[in-house]
Every structure is written in C-alpha cells, then in structure tokens.
Length: 69
Image (cartoon, rainbow, N blue to C red; front, side):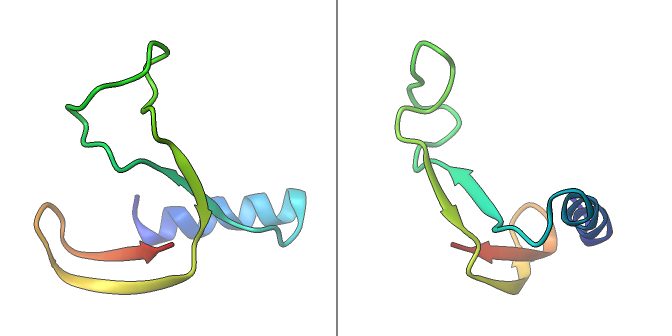
C-alpha cells in the first residue's frame, strides 16, 4: 500500500471513530508453513505500531517504509 492510500484510509477511520490505537496482526510463520484448519497461521499475534523507518533497499519493493512493532 502506498503512503497516500494509507493516510487516506487512516484519516477516514479517524473521522468515523476518533483518534484510536493502530494495531497490526502478524505471524512468525512463512507463507508456505503449516496453517490451522481455518487457514490462519497457528501463531497469530497482534501488537501496536511503535516506530517507522525508511528501508532504502527492501528486497522486493526497493525503497519502502517499515513499521516496527
């Protein structure tokens, strides 16, 4: 997702719900590793976004913003 789309989406959420916490769901499993019967990773976790950095040499996207949680 591009920064402009992320900002627009977050602004729309803020208008509707106020200045609420932003969280992210993730897993330590790779895409090709075992999944639970429902199709979701078996070790899902949720956390908040803490900081942002610009990764100048992301292997897939080149320059990209990385969220640290």
